Amino acid sequence: MAETPIRFGIVGCADIARKVSRAITLAPNATLYAVGSRSIEKAKKFASENGFPPTAKVYGSYEALLDDPDVDAVYMPLPTSLHVHWAVLAAEKKKHLLLEKPVALNVAEFDQIAEACESNGVQFMDCTMWMHHPRTAKMKEFLCDSQRFGNLRTVHSIFTLPGDPDFLKNDIRTKPDLDALGSLGDTGWYCIRGILWAADFELPKTVTAVRGPVLNELGVIMSCGSSLQWEDGKVATFHCSFLSNLTMELTAVGTKGTLRLHDFIIPFEENSASFSFGSKSWFDDLVTGWLQRPSEHVVMTDLPQEARMVNEFARLAKGIKEGMKPEKKWPTISRKTQMVVDAVNLSIQEGFVPVEVDK
Image (spheres, rainbow, N blue to C red):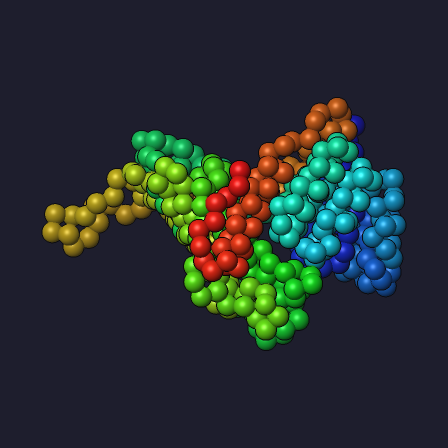
């Protein structure tokens, strides 16, 4: 007997929802069931252009979709300022919640969302897609190898993209009433998640924002950076921006090894991804070259990372239907990422002073 797929509703027709709709179609245990928008015409257009089956429900409001008892789970790509209201309501309607990042404007808002999910027994996951690529698990094997990598000492991450004039003027990520965290909440979220992932999600003791962030005329962050400091001496830095060439770098350095990749958020190719790893590196006798170059490792995947994300989320949702408890790993790492975002934002606001990360 064929497995009954998890029925997804899409709450809002943001551009990123096109990618996730395709991912739901590709995931073997999920199906596109409904889409809701504030405009029924927009919802119909989105469904027709994004592979929804003819039987899919189309709603002219978010509420109507959430009231549909046949919707098992929702993907929610709404502006961050709307997350706390609609995400809490979705949880109260017993819908499993796949939420775009940043998950909230601050950790207090996120805690409302997480509490609603927990009290209603629904699964929460944020849409940090690269976490689900098999390359990520393979890289973790190197980081956990005490003989080849040793102890983590520093991490550096960069995610920048070149916003054109229309983006910088009109995108919701540049508007204080829609996505007030700007680049910090968008590209910075990925940088912070990459750092925490390398550090096994151990929170830093303090963060200190770098001087010279760029804000637009409305006061929204377009570019910023920060350092992170741990009690055991580990340090990390990141830079995020809407004002520079597309760059997605992650480097983790241990006492014995170095891991590096240049496309850590979106791989250069959909079905394969690579990283380099060097261990016990040193120069030749005359210091004219390296004794050995870092090795290149390629990881293949049969499904793109966003479809793997949907597949894992749907697996957890199905498990809950069968009596399992929601997986707490995902809201836990979302909260830690949000805590560091909050601390960086506070450091900027208070003049680039060190800010303790409240555990």
